[in-house]
Length: 75
Image (cartoon, rainbow, N blue to C red; front, side, top):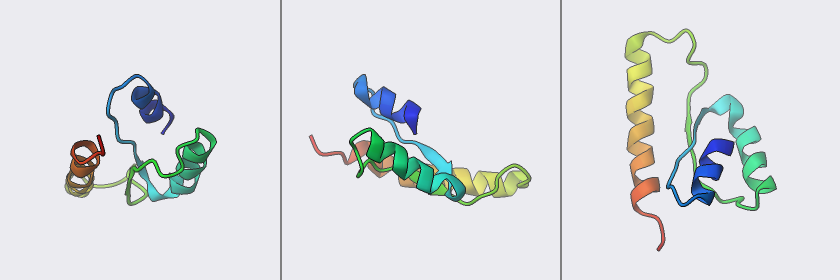
């Protein structure tokens, strides 16, 4: 989350992706940085032992959810 927020501060559109195990922490980071409504993508946890097919499905899901976050931002 921190890296995405730093990129945004530099004018680079970014979307953080994390597993649901870290969602609460990510929300805390956005609140502490003054952007409590900053959108991010959450995927299922864990990923460490996922099969290639499962990782590919999670990646595809994340990309599909990222696209509108990057392209449909208010001006």
